[in-house]
Image 1 (tube, helix red, strand yellow):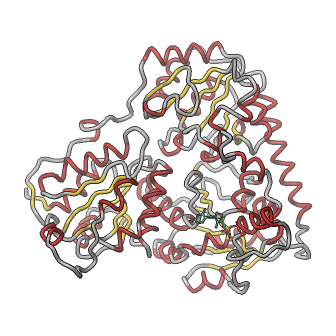
Image 2: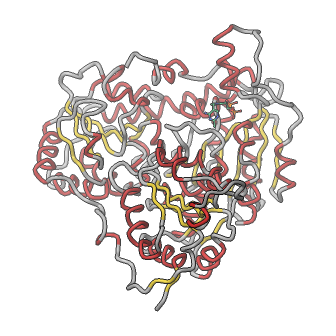
Image 3: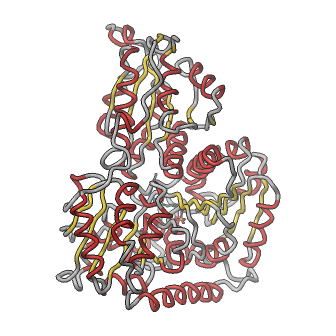
Length: 577
Ligand SMILES: Cc1ncc(C[n+]2csc(CCOP(=O)(O)OP(=O)(O)O)c2C)c(N)n1
């Protein structure tokens, strides 16, 4: 049966389990959007193409599959540029599909062409693969190469152009191949290396498991839990991987922001690293807290990209493969020889939790709850995270408030959506909507979401509140409002001293996010006392609407008292690493 190109693209992506698309349609895409909706896809038009790209990125993280973002020709795809960059730095397998003028138009020597710019040169250096479907019969090979490259090695974005002249052309082809017939799927590591790794794990005195964000983007929580139980050791999260593995919450703490983790790292003689690039936020696994005992510490590294082995630090046993293949191999290899609890495990669990409890207590003393003292960001974080909904998705955005979250967060969510590496503020609302929609499309259930954000970051894509309302998402946005770009105010103060001129970092004080939100059809709350934060969040969830809780926080504390700020600075101590 003859199939038009736009439909074949959808069939090929369906073979990969994709059933959501994010983008704003135009003549290049109306056929595709209508067909997708008819096939039961979740078709979401946001209010900006960058938001579409961020939504797709969040979708890829929460489903473990590639995701699809669409930008129409010219300005549409140009608007997606920040999301393309973000997906590249965050290793997110997003397929950016764009329209283009028919090739004959593109090739003519003309001036004044509408919505026309040569697009591939704009993006080819920011993606793992850039191609154009010039002829209809190249549809399969180009889409499949796009997915192969997006998912292979270090995952990342690809750019595929789909010019006007091929959209309606017809093909007569059998059903698309299943993924395992055209690309590596869940490949495991070399079996001899797995045996070597198992031997090192059995022989170690103080092993640790270092887990990064890919544990979650590969949806491997259950299997990593089994592995951690067999290793019976502390689990250390990278700051990019602050999603918690279900069932391991009590033995998992964050590198740098938990003293118990620092102690476990320092004393370890074996590190099994999974789903992490071993980047700056873990000091490349080689300096600062790793320096002590470096001489006796062995490293096992599970990584899909062979070109990443040994780059950031020497590795004793590389396990090259997909976490989805390698973690089950390690579990099988250790199944019959589970380890006794590591010597420091009990203290690690006890001390880690005591530290969190103590921080929560300490935050109470910083704002008394009466409203006489402005709400300290530490208290803002403690009060918000203590009512984080069960099985919820946490989304983060902001500057200083995120730094406070690293230390003070009281919840241990299984999904945290945020970009540690690219550090792109403004992504919170699109991430929230994209992750929640894709999760619902994949599971049929609507999980609650909580976006904890600062005000300036919230402004970037505030129009996406409408998308959340339209899609009926159980989302509550808790906004810490200090009417300033707080982290940068802190930079001014540190650079030039207290009371110096601060330009470009303060904005008008009258903005009321609760009222803006009501205009979008949301439930709004305005909070000035610390003790009112949690009840306001609960009312927002109970309203059955998208909620926005405007919390007035202390601009001085937010810019001056970030916890462990000097630690954070060591990540990018220029030239010293
Ligand atoms: C897209 C983007 N622009 C600029 C920055 C630099 N930046 C990092 S944090 C920050 C301030 C954020 O202000 P706000 O959202 O109000 O959070 P606060 O620091 O006040 O908690 C800025 C400008 C960035 N990371 N990303």
